[in-house]
Amino acid sequence: MVSLCKQKKTTMAPKQRVILDTDPGVDDVLALLLALSASPEELELAMISVTYGNVPLQSCLRNVVALFHVLEKEMKWREETGKSTRGFGALNTHKPIVAVGPEHALEDEILAADHFHGADGLHGVHEKQPHLSPADTWRSLFSDEEPQGEKVEPPSYSKYFTPSKAPAHKEILRILKESPENTVTVVAVGPLTNVALAAAEDPETFLRVKELVVMGGAVNVEGNVTPVAEFNCYADTVAAARVYALTSPNPISTMPPVIHGKSFLPPYPAKLSKQLKLTLFPLDITTPLELRKKYFYETIQPITKSGSPLALWIETFMTGIFNKVEAMLGDGSEPGLSLHDPACIWYMLTQDDPAWEPVAKPEDIRIETSGQWTRGMHVVDRRQRAKPDVQSSKVETHPSDPLDATTFDEVPGDDMGWLSANKGNRINRMVKTPGDEKFAAILMDRLFG
Picture 1 (cartoon, rainbow, N blue to C red):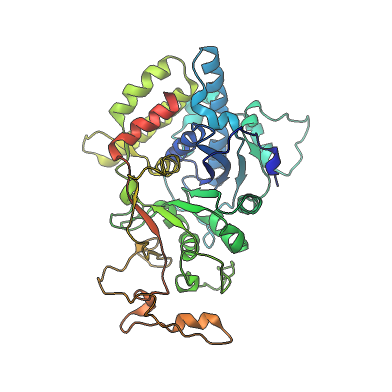
Picture 2: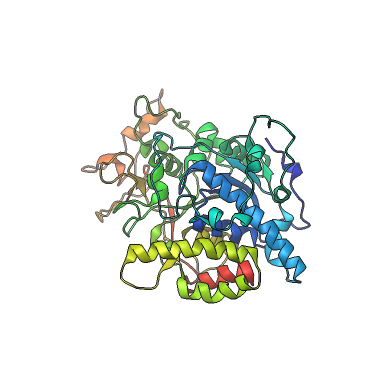
């Protein structure tokens, strides 16, 4: 593993230290760029935890490496043309660890197909702009195998990150263990496999996290991969269910069913020191945050024409996205890209803004892991029945097995403990942003202003 002491140092501690768990397709890359464009006082990107998702794992990793390759060219271009590089303070101050996780979901080796981002995750940008794609020698950075023939020198752009050959979930745990408690936030914008593995291996170390910010799910709106499911959750429902369960006072009450021959992660300990704070950004709040085609081209094209490698790279894959959305809509309306993943980084940068509005009280949102038609659904109780408060809810325990508490505390006519004050998840769902219509301009200004 990589020691924290090898990281670049800054004169002032950042307000936010973030581990970004991501499956880089288009909006993931925009989220990464937004994080790296922050000032060093605003945010430190401590780690990029790469997972499969939009495309297979190695394609996701390639897109992360390509991002740093492009940023190296962009920084050089800005210096040569006298343009300021202060907009990428975090990139030039901190050096994130990059580590990869498994190639598939916890209990499913077949990847959920997502063709929205193109075959490579970035709509063919590697073929269309080959000079902006790194040579395949980058693979040796993450491989234990000794290269054949001449020794391969690390690429110059690797100065911006520290590659790790340890599994991503182990690096997550190491950073949380080496950092003071409640100082590191994990932002997860892909399938939750890496996060679930970390939580399963060492729950108490994982609960040292300040907050887990998740882009995923659809609560009061339709899904985007099925009528009820959002892609990130659908891609690994078991991982999502296990992670959400850590928000419960009794995690066993919402854990996914154990499937013989498939389930390999252990249950959580009967007693945990605290509940996980999980802030959820579902499609309900992220879909309206659109980067529209007309505004995008009006903003990016002059920058591309001036010679910006980053602008050319982004314009290339965004053109693919707009073409895809236009084909999906089929009605001639102006296409836009919903900024699902960048929304979570916007939240990290502006968390103190009172305009961010979560639900008044954490919600019991549970993940359907085995439904034929409802797999990946975020299930909530819409029955409008009164819940007993915690004080009036009597919980009995068996002296030899505290988990027996979950078999008591029942409300008549309520299966699965939806009305119990001692069961169910406690999800902090975000319902309002500081301004849906202004985020696209904020993003573009951060990257190119």
